[in-house]
Each structure stands twice: as C-alpha cells, then as structure tokens.
Length: 398
Image (cartoon, rainbow, N blue to C red; front, side):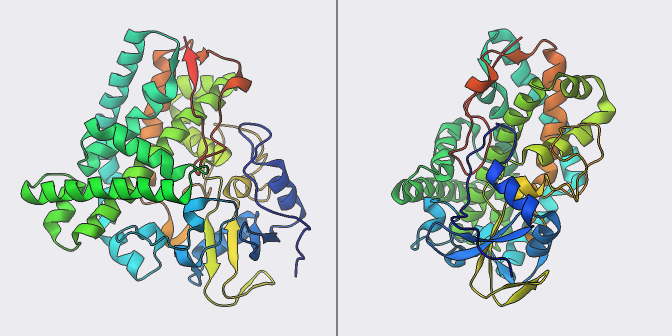
C-alpha cells in the first residue's frame, strides 16, 4: 500500500493560469493514488490517475453524501457538520434518492432538446456581441459576454426572471467562494432557496411553460424539493459555463494559432470545445467521494469511511490517457475527459454547456477578429479562491 507523503495536502495554488498545481502533477508522476491528509486531519486518499478516477466515479460503494465527506481544503460549506443537503439537491444524494430526481430531469437535457435550443442560444449570443460592439472596447468579457449568455439561457430554461440575476449571481458567488465563512455560505444558500420557494409558489398559482413550471404541474415534488432542484440547476447552469467561456477565451488569446483554428474552421469547433474542457478543467477541487465499505482499488485497500479526492485537472492531463496532454491542441480528437464527471453523477447539463460553447466561442472570435487582452496576461485575476476555477475579470479590446 502506498504510504502517505509527509505533509501531502491538497492545493489549489496554480503556478501558471492554465495548468494544474505543480505539486499535484508531481504526485501523479509518482503514482496514480496516494495517501493524503485532509483539512480536518482525516487520512484519506488522492487520486491523480485517469483509470482510477473513472473507477471511483463508477463504483457504487463510493458516496457523495455531504455528512460523510471530509474537506480536502478549508472549504467551509463542505466542512460544516451542521450542513444538511436541501431537499432536491440531488448532486449530494446517492441512489435510489438520486435516481428519483435524475429520472424526472433527464428528458429536459437530451442532445435533441439542446439542438432545439440552439437558435435561441445563437440569438442571445449575437445580442451580447451587438451590445459589446455598440459599447466599444475595452470591456470585461466576463460581465459583457461570458456570464450573461449561460445566465440568460438557464433562466429561460428554468423559468427564472433574468431581472433577478443580481440576486442569484451574488448568492452563487458567496456559496462558491472558498473565503466565505460557514455563516455567510449558509445565509446565501438560504436566501436563494427562499427566492426559489417564492418562485415555485407563483408558478403553482400561474402555470408556466418552462422546466420548473413543468415540475410544479407534474406534482411529484413538494415545494422544498422543487426549490432544491432549482438551486442546483440555476447555480450550476450559469457558473460553470460562464467560467469556461471566460477562461477558454483567455487561453485562446494566449495561443494565437489555436484561436485562429476555432475562428476560421467550423469543422474544428466541436473538438475544440472538448479539448478546452479537458485542458482547462474548471472543477479544480474534487470530485470527492467516501467509501461506504472496504473497496480494493487496483491493489489499494480503501477502507469504509475513508475519503477519496479526485484531482480532476490533473487526471485530465494524464499522459497515459491523453497524448501530449500538457499541450492545448484544438484539432486533436478528445474523448472521455472527466470534466463533466463519470458514472451516475455525470453532469446532467453537459449537452447544454457544450451547445453554449460551440456557439459562443466562434461567434465572439469572428465578430471581433482583432480581439486581444487589454491588460498583460499576468494581470488577469484568476479564481483560485473559488470552488469553480476561471477568471474573475477578463479585460479585452479589439
């Protein structure tokens, strides 16, 4: 069995903006699984190899329930012993509870359903580009483009008024900040849940033709469950894609040949989205699982109750799975990256995120062929202090 590296703890500190932390990469180069000391002194495991990461995510004996988890870093919301999963927040449930909610929603996020949404995504994207062109540069691409597109799309899909974006974006940011205290994170979550309960009541009184309205009409979920489902889909639906659009654009602006391929060759775009998802991996803490029983993982005994943290950003650079993994190459065929997870908890909205990126990246680069950073690359503020990686701001001009 692999012994603990003295002092090995998880880190989110990146030496370069697009690469995982060097320390975690060094661990992967030694072995795909290591003992690790967690923030609460729990001795668990760190997985940095692709094959073992897939095995953990697919194994039914690993749980995602928050009361069983241990924090790899001082992530206050995960650490709170008093934290209870909101009803309907199914990403933190195991089967069969998880299965119940997932089945209700799977049909809303199929490839066919996302294709039907593409004309509206294109319209939203072009509207944002028109606004940028009218305003003129420089602009913060996060606020002008990356955040509004997925926010507008998920609001229309769920039936959440976009005029309320300031409230849900603020609460989401507090919930995802690694600097938030337990009290701050819980207050933000409670505020957003309260907002969604009120919205559910309005939809019950006045039926609406949207995802939440359909769930209300279906009658299978109560008010608390509906609010919890709304919380998960609203936060995940805008924060993840917004950060991929911001960070992905930053990466392309610092790789002119790759940018030109995405801008000029429509045949490259679909693969480019997969490569950016793999190369950048904005989920830079976890996934985290806890063994429900003893599990043999490639000769390593994971005992019941022991936590396993998968370093997704490092796993997606595993050279045994991805050739020349440290290089961004939008023309390469990429399959099987773990940015959307794997197994029963694989991201429900992955096809929506893909559609938004396939449309937004080339549209931005074609509208503004002279797009460039308005500040030195080293001055772009990175989201190392957030549970979802990306850029806080991306000043650009053209």
